[in-house]
Each structure stands twice: as structure tokens, then as C-alpha cells.
Image 1 (cartoon, helix red, strand yellow):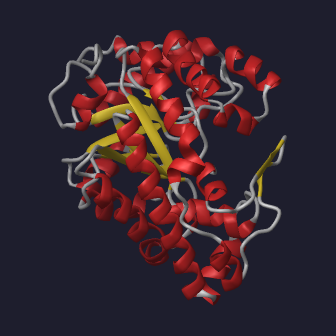
Image 2: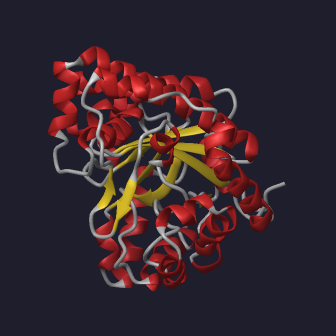
Length: 341
């Protein structure tokens, strides 16, 4: 029995005394304890060693004390499992030395046995659950098929992903074949995450906002929705699409339990676009955590007033930045816990 189930109650559309709070990338670079492990072990070693992944996951629960933990991992473990070689280089981010550019490249990828290729993630979940000792729920996650596709085709992060988009438009059969393979793998992966102990799942569509509304429906949302449909009877699913405010109406008709909102979409617009019924999550600008602590607390209280305390999960509009002082992250969480309507 969870000691703090506020996060799950919000996902269930229950009336709550205050909204729950957690932060995307809360297990990460702003914490000195995380940096100490980063300096000793390379990125994929941390992801693939259950003891390290579990320790990193619980660090913010001990230090910042949010209402939910999110498993330390990476969206790019999925393409690695599919036979796509991924490297992580300092100051450059993820690099795929041999990006996918032809149907032959697509055919070389495969839908893997997730137990063989991603078993270390499921082991990390089980160990994390032991360490959490039912204090708070555990969130598992995956990147959207479109976001994974962007890295696989572009070969690296860019500002526009023009190569990935161009591949879709010039070679749609190959593009849809790859997107479906990523979708099938992700469904298998997330179902096993739930079996291993995750209490909810979040899908990150980091690059959905690169697409026009029409192209978003074809190349991103229809694949995300497949994942939502496959998981909705087994767990709560949150969909977060950065820059995808234009799709909130369509998303709200799905079986998703909550929708993430970035800082470019106001609470009023998000409620209007989604019909006012579905739980929303967000949308504090991560850079605003550099504001003075009294300002952070004031803005958090105003944000809750705007969204309303029910059907709402307090979060950032994207991942926490590495240069945020820990005291400011704590203040963000404390502001929510201090909130009284």
C-alpha cells in the first residue's frame, strides 16, 4: 500500500487536498549526488546497471521529496535494443553514427525480445521499488515513436530535424515501417515495465512540435495513440508533447489519463482545448527555477490557482536544467505542499 498516493489519485480524477508534484528529469544533473556518480560511470553504464539506476531514481525522493519517482533511464535504450547503434558524447548528446536513410536501413532494424535486450531496465524497476519502500509511486517512460525516429534518421539532435522530416515526406513507406517497428517495441517494453512494478507511464514526444498539425497526426499521434490504447487497461498513461498544444484536443479524446503541457500554453488554453475534464500536468518554465525563491513560490501558487487543484499535477514544462540550485528545486516542491486554496 503506497504511503503517498496523491499522484495516482490525481490521475484517477479524484478530489485531492492539494495537487501532486514531481519534476521531469528530477533524477539528474542539478543534484551533486547525481554528478558524483556521473563522474565515476559513463551514461549507458548508469542506465544498464540496476543498482546505479535505482540509486539515481531515489536520490530526488530523499533530497527534494516530490510525490512521485521517475525511473532513471533514457528514451534511446529502445533504438539500441532494435539494433541501432547509439553513442552518447559529452557536450554533443546522443549520436547515431549510421543513421537510417533507406528502406534497406529500416529492414535491418528489428522488434526485439525485450527481456533479452532490456531486462536490465526491469531489474532496475524491481530494485527501485524495494528502495522506495512504498513511499511514492514509480513512473516508467518511453520516447514517442516520432521522437525516437528523429534521432534514428537525423543521427543527432538538431533544431529542426529537417532530415527526419524529409525522409517522411520523400519515403513515407519506409518512414511508416520504421515508426511501426518502434511502436511495437515500445508497447512490449512498457507492458513489461508495468509488470515489473511501474505505477504509471509517461510518453515523451519531445520533437512533436517540429511537425505541422496535419503531419503530427500522421507521423506522431497515431503511433502514440497505439501505445496508449495498448496500455490503458493496465496502467495510467500520461502523454507529454512539447510544442504540441495544437493536438491537445485530439489527445483529450484518447484513453490517456493525463496530458502534459509546456510553458508556451496557458492553463486557460489547455483547459479549453481539452474540454476541461482530463488531468493536466505542467507547465512551469524550467528557467523560472532560477528566480528568487519567494518568486518561485508565488508563481507556483498562481499556477495552481489557474489550473485548479483537482485534475492537475504540478510539474515543469520540460526537464529541470542542470544549473538549477537544489534549494530552488526544493522550493518548487515545497510551494505545492504549502498550497492552500
